[in-house]
Amino acid sequence: MTNPKYKLIEAFRDGFDSDIDPNKLFVVRYDKLPNIYTALINCDSKDLLLMLQNDYQISDANILKLDEESKKGRPTSIKKESSQFILELKNELFIEYTDYKVKFFYANPLDKALIMEIAGKLKKKKPKNDYKNRFYMVARSRRTEYGLDLQHFKITKDAIEIKELYNDDFWPVHEQISFFLNEKKKNGIIMLHGKYGTGKSTYIRYLMQNHAKRFIFLPNHMVSALSSPEFMPFMTNYSDSILVLEDCEDLLRPRTNNNRNEALVNLLNLGDGLLSDAMSIKLICTFNADLKNIEPAILRKGRLAARYEFDALTIPKAKILAEKIGVELPINTPLTLAELFNANKQNFGEIEGKSVGFGVPK
Image (cartoon, rainbow, N blue to C red; front, side, top):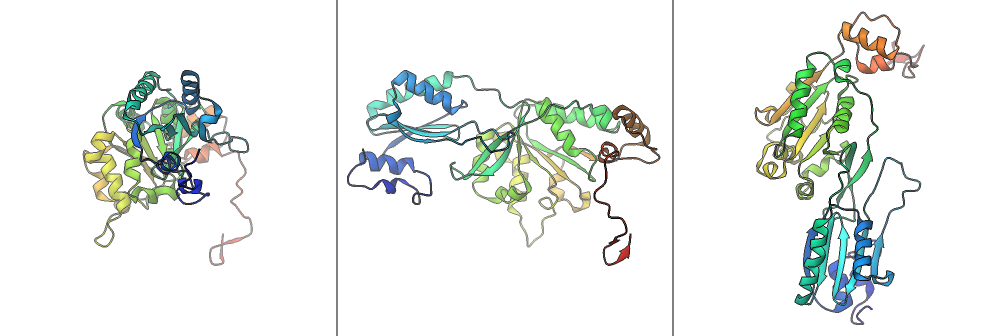
């Protein structure tokens, strides 16, 4: 029961439309400041809740808060595996699960033995290897400590043949990239650039399918999060991951005396800085701009693990691929992958009889 000295609303961070602050809830419930013990885990929250209920006779009445998300009506690619919960294990001892952390709030030092017993059971649970054929997108969240969270997406398996989709000079670079991604305790930046339709995103999809690593996609509208003070602490939860930034030429523009660009500074530190040594974060950056319009520091030897400029397929390679995918068209010039794979599709971008720009005939 709530302590009569307090109102339940005082347990919320900023009123009923915000989340519950477990520290405040402990004070409201017990009129005491809590001690806190935190354990990091990598298991599904439902499995954890079931274990606690079975091993410690936790009834539904002991669950103070259960926060779940329905998957109905949502894109099937999004898979939110974890829910949040707060439960009362016994008087003056409750447990909160959120963002792969289990926090124990307690007042009696004698309860520490019970807490360590539970934490020991958690450490014995084998983490699920759910990285393969998945990638994760950074999203804002009011539920997590740093205001950021990861959404999980499942990657569809494609039959991608690197040697068929790209020019011959790409194979040695691909081998270098694959070796680098599999190295442990390594950090650095992979730069993939070239004009649209040459297969940069297709290649990243191939890497995701063939490397059992956590790939984290930072969408363009979230790039500003790189400059926030919360981003680096947030990324410490996901060491040995690959951070992917597509079409990020605006982020990579050269710095000036009047523009420090904190987002770029953090990107450089992730790729080759003191913090990156501990986190082992690898980065994949794609862009379409000329190299002269890219910050020189990002191209420094030692920071750059690999770089490749994608181009249209040569005429011989384009003819071989066209025959394989069943495209019949005369090939007299190099073609991009986009041009080949969409050769038999109607171009809805063409507007016959219309002028382009300022009244100039098409």
